[in-house]
Image (cartoon, rainbow, N blue to C red):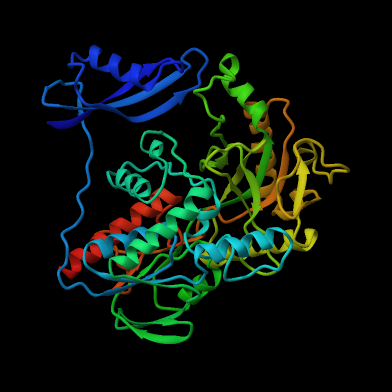
Length: 509
């Protein structure tokens, strides 16, 4: 028997999974006892084609030109005498890199500047309720990385068989099984907090070590080779290390820029969070299908090109159905927003980042722009969220009253013309893009905008060799994941972590 699948199998949103599988077997001439399952399911919301679209997998020996082979991934060969491999950062990239290294006989030494997830959750919730920021334990730093306080989206544009392995691993350690078949899978922050802890315990069980509240403070390179890393200021001899830092680690970026590494500028984005009624969005997206029990909270994807000469755009990012807007600050006197939701996605508001792409002239300029915007936001709101209505934002005025949906940002919001937080050209692009967003997505539905969103991706890339994945100028150092400039979300970060682990294992063989 072999695993094959068929694409683009459409069915009414009223059809059960059992009905879909039975119909697929019949249409493809397979016996009713053939093992079949839903490999992926998406929703086509176009009014003339409103339906679920399935990828159905079969276990069969029958040959058919319409069948495609199910992609598979095989774990690397186990190393009998593995070595200690420091992995700096315990977000998705570092977590999956350390997990695979441990599975295959190495002894990962995970270095995480933040705290374990249970303590981290307490620190974050206290901060959201008005306590002072803990610069080393917050939405950016700690076990699980920034993704732990997010919607837990596992969508990605990459097509890699490792994606399935990531999904299956999440399920193995506690994620709902339905993420295996959804075209837009999400775990939810509530599930992620349990899963990252389970993965950490597995890594330790396999022989790894995890050190929390331990910060990478420097590295030493000699003749293009890694010689030492410094942890809380103390030297640690090693000729190999994985650099899986998050994109909020500004101090680590500055330390790396002082070292002989090849680091280049990279486009990133800035903008704000918009939130609006989830129920109204469901009505607008689903139309006559509103209220169907098989349909979850509606989502959307938006993009508008603001400069056709270079493709510069304003777009939606990290759309959180039934979620909330959160304070994602990691530095004193700086303010950053993000979106988060629980697995149930049952909150009254939907939210998404509305972002304008930025092309800095250097890594330093990108970091400086982030600081400028985040500092200005904190100064005008003193820890609250600078907020405005969609109408007032487009009219470039401070709102007298924040009408529309109630803010979910804790500890609260303050009326402000958020145009003032951004350089004039960026603010103009954001207004142009939001006007189109209002027209296409919201219609007449009011929106509340809270700023700023500045940490969606890294403003730099630590260059690495395409074949070995080692730093271009430092043998033994492996830049990895989102903070290094090679991923853009939980799934792509986890996949990059697996790829780096594979290269390390191959080198050690």
